[in-house]
Length: 596
Image (cartoon, rainbow, N blue to C red; front, side, top):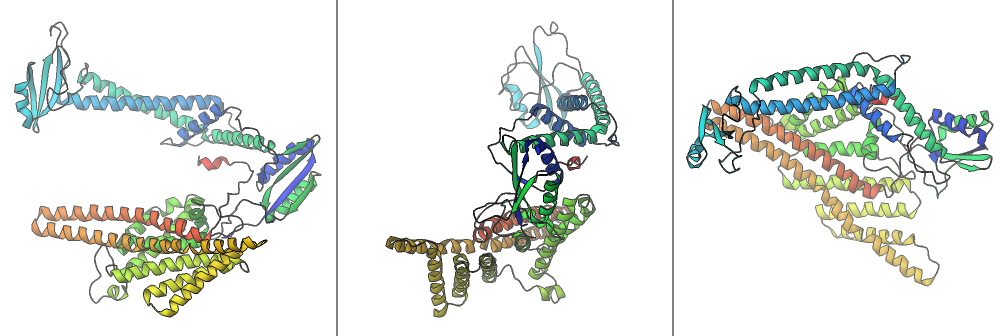
């Protein structure tokens, strides 16, 4: 994967040809437009209707049952469909809310039985107030003044009615009163049944309306294209009878756009970007790991003048995730779950890219788990092949600390090496090379202290200072002092380097926490099974199941968050000094993006 080389194209012609050119460019879909004048505010022709159309389409797409959509030639009144879909959505929401309220009311009234409240005149102005009181609080009834009665007893609960003119205070009994309402249980059940019928009828209507989802998606895409087209019209420069359009396009499309301009009789200039330009970034996605760029652009778009670190981010993330999960059994469980959804993920292009990347990550996690010798927190049998190939001991603090630090040194050294190669024959390249020397000298001082490594470390910092200061031009004697100051300031980044390397200790800490938690659940389940025969075995199984399930969830969360963090903060801090902005092609939308 690489950043696609771009060219700046400028097209000029008569104003009468402007509309045709913009339509053709929107069909071509390869140009990132530049504003040659301050565009007017993007005011949609009918923003309310656009929002209503999107809400209606989403409601129809999410219908539980999908019948065949009407073909493109089928005549449909889209405004009527939108109104009907939104009305159906409101009807369903109100029906579901009514059903939930009735279910709650029935649950509260059901223990008291099916009865009809007597007329107010028969109660002489008093009312009935119902409570569900735990049997252990029965003594509380003897302390209240209003008359009361126990209607029934069930499962250590007392069903109590209090007779009072006004609603009793909230602290009358140690439990709040039950809101039963004035309607009988049979009336509520009948209304619930009718509400269920209303929901079924509304869902049936929704299914029929969903036949119009294809036409609605096409109409919505056309409306959005129209808004993009109007925005593009406001980005051109117009001078009397002439206009100009400018933008960035991939070099491979230059011939196609040049042919378009020649066919329309327009003047065109295609030129390479100069050092003062800031083109957008377009990352080429090819091969089985083409989706890896999503890991990079999710957080930061590389500057056009830098490089695409997607593959390095992907493989380093896979290693970090494996070191944090640190268990082959957990990786196998995730692999089985992933295999279950393999075919479903293959239904879309994005899913096919994602499943290949996930397969690689889980394969690395399983391999590292085998090297660690962790299988749901258990060690492999003594003398087995699995024990022989398990050469990493997560409980060996000294070894795991060294491993984490070495991984961090290699990761940040790789970032500097990439900058060194990309900026070859510049002072940036010299500075990055010196930082690599400082990295490995510091590592050797920690592993095997020797005078030689201290000397190399000092020499590396001196080169860093010289390279950082050399970027400041010297035009007068005072500039020499500024150059020295800039050099010293650049050398102070050694503190940042030290802190970044220590950040990789989280790989050791989180991996150890995952292994320790797995051992704890195993030990706890074993003790329960041994001390409580019979029922203890069932309890031990539940402890193992839910305990390891929680540990897997924590491992996934920690692996994703911290695995990406080490790339986004530490690695990007040394590898990508600048940030770009994404390439956005001026093109027509496709209704299939809604997955109708």
